[in-house]
Length: 275
Image 1 (cartoon, rainbow, N blue to C red):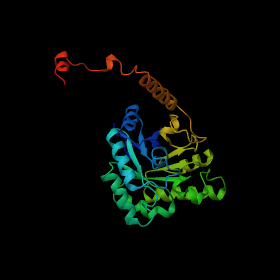
Image 2 (spheres, rainbow, N blue to C red):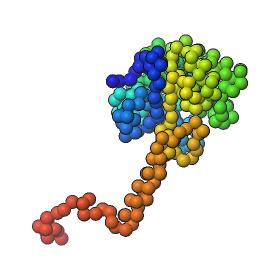
Image 3 (tube, rainbow, N blue to C red):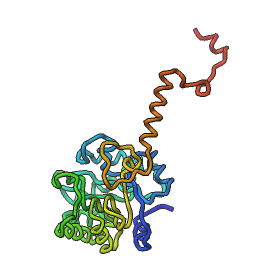
Image 4 (cartoon, one colour):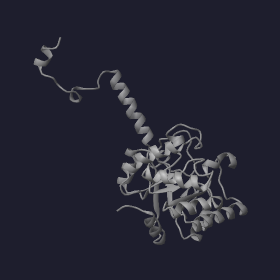
């Protein structure tokens, strides 16, 4: 059964945890979808884990549309949510709605995600008015890494925690259907989750959120540059892949691959007539 924004709300209402992972290509999206994931996030994290950038700030709308197209072809049942990249919604409400619309019409997403709180309420309201479902993102917002002074836990003081709660309420009031809470103390995230009617999706914010999301390269051990504290490695796929690559290289070097069973034959008549 296809997951929708209504599914998210029903799961929140029934106290059923929501599962979400990132994906950036058809094959991965298909595997996650077949495993039964509720939602797939085409995150601008692709800048780091797919394109090799140091942060997410260099990711473009064209990048996002390209990868969202691939994911939407592989996801038949999961809700596909695509990130609005840096500077794609910051200039004006009109710009925000147009770019969000592109992720839906060109990329095939069913919803978009943006970072920021009350300051983007007008953008969220306008997108919702255009029938574009919007997921918010609060706490550690990677597009604001320079303003935040790095990738740091957010909401540790009374003032900071209250600001996140106020932002969450503003996004809910503006029409957001869900909110990602990233790197917030677990108790704060749980309090925010209980204060909202809409579901929260946690990443590094504890088990009190209504759902969880991880970057799939992190949870499979595919991205060795840095592993955040909040990541659990559910499989060592990276090591398995390296072992496979090494075995392939060895057999090619030893001329043991391809073997007879991997080749096609030709008749002697054809061989005799070649000159």
